[in-house]
Length: 271
Ligand SMILES: NC(=O)c1ccc[n+]([C@@H]2O[C@H](COP(=O)([O-])OP(=O)(O)OC[C@H]3O[C@@H](n4cnc5c(N)ncnc54)[C@H](O)[C@@H]3O)[C@@H](O)[C@H]2O)c1
Image 1 (cartoon, helix red, strand yellow):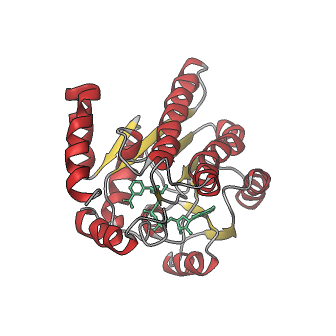
Image 2 (image 1 turned 120 degrees about the vertical axis):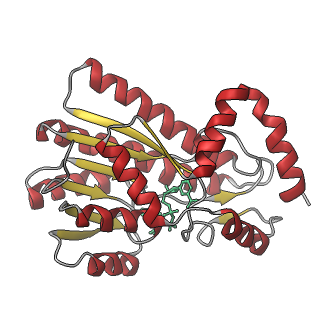
Image 3 (image 1 turned 60 degrees about the horizontal axis):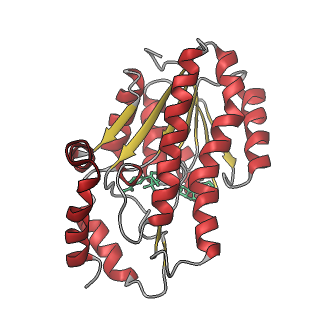
């Protein structure tokens, strides 16, 4: 996909943060947009900001498999076809393996992994039919390295990466007209930490403040990097200097990155 003009793009979780910025960026490049979220007021704000674009909004909970398949059919009915799907909707959880509840573990996997997997599979036949399709799945730098108190988020985001990298190879081997990219943002200044669930012994206030301090990249900048990566058909899109740093450490050190993370966490997470 060399040009986004008049392409039909689907963005989940578009009521806030990276999803909203992606919708705005794509609208500015002439895309027709199907945006969705569970947060209908945030979504309405995003839609209102896409002045003049051919855009529609849809209430969608990505953890609901049947709702995603119905959404895919509805978008094709409304727009005729689909070229680009960005499975962006996501949530965060900060809790140790010992402490997190089954309910919280299932909640995050249902949204961050199954939401992406169902979103990909529901739209894939339509992307193939379009003759010029692209799937973009949002993982994280926590899909590259493991971090204490992020085991569930790590599990979901590593799973997104494996699923997406496998799909990219399949599409090539089958000569399908669908490109595939996996996105690994570092800290992006969004609402994600505010909306996160926390284990009962976590200091939620301190964690949220800590996130605001280390999140280096704005959502607008993140969206620009992601869209440029899509246009260059990058398999792995790293977002922000911290993401590049973490990717480099991972490549250089292999599993020996872990003592570094332990040292950082002892000072910042286990105080
Ligand atoms: N902000 C970061 O530092 C960061 C870093 C790495 C990866 N990410 C990933 O980026 C993506 C976007 O997050 P963000 O930072 O913009 O957060 P955000 O909280 O600002 O936006 C997430 C959006 O997803 C929506 N959402 C949550 N649950 C949903 C569901 N079940 N169905 C549909 N929509 C739902 C929320 O209502 C919200 O509008 C997520 O997948 C997140 O894991 C974010």
